[in-house]
Image 1 (tube, helix red, strand yellow):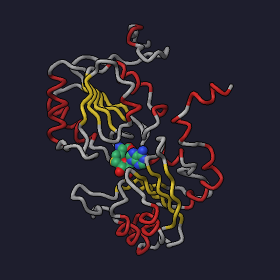
Image 2 (cartoon, rainbow, N blue to C red; image 1 turned 135 degrees about the horizontal axis):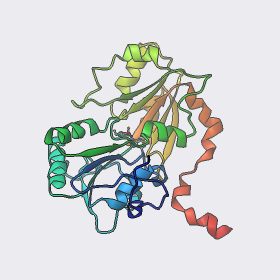
Image 3 (spheres, helix red, strand yellow; image 1 turned 90 degrees about the vertical axis):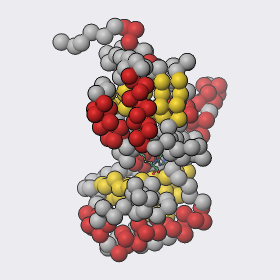
Image 4 (cartoon, rainbow, N blue to C red; image 1 turned 90 degrees about the horizontal axis):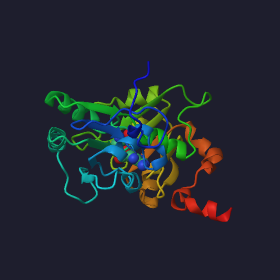
Length: 283
Ligand code: SAH
């Protein structure tokens, strides 16, 4: 038997039952990589209902614009030239807001459990006895590849794919990654936060047996109007990063799948996000 939901809870206008966002709860929600069209229905519903939205630097302004008018918007990111909040401070803030009876939307770029510290926040909520819900999002390493015309897998190119971080909590290249084993085992590598330590990462992959000629792409600000894709190779990646001024946030994708962009990269144009009315006007 489906659980009956009051119709006013169908806040984002879709005729499917969505769970009520109760006061005193925290929803830990993935906002996707940028394009608001990649939000889940649960995320849109949460934006429409939340009393307070606590968001990261990577949450796109167009996504925040969907918050209920009057909702309090709190920035709790770790970059962007603004003062950074420490992780324990953010968790404590979520707990305090929930205990004050607010409906707290913790909105994170991509997926909250992919290199997003969502696991740490969820554990703090459990420890504090605060009820919460997790809403997965489209991670940049999936959405960004798709919008660049790079399939994450094809039968011809790869039977494995690895998501890796290029930046450890210490600020260095992660030393708990066996780069040689990774180089040998996953033919497609999707590397987050790789721009800074790219030289060390590329050197380890080549030392681990990958060819310097293997294709690599930088997917910068993927799925936003600022999306930029720079195609390179493992061997030329550092020089191209510097010459082309590649900037974070960027996903680095390594593998034969990158060649498919030549054929498939045509399907999406970042300008589509800037001028959605133009098409209607021309009709
Ligand atoms: N939870 C996020 C990842 C957070 S770590 C997710 O699932 O996507 C931050 C890193 O994610 C950035 O340094 C960058 O490597 C990547 N990233 C996030 N959004 C991005 C975007 N729109 N374009 C390119 N890379 C992005």
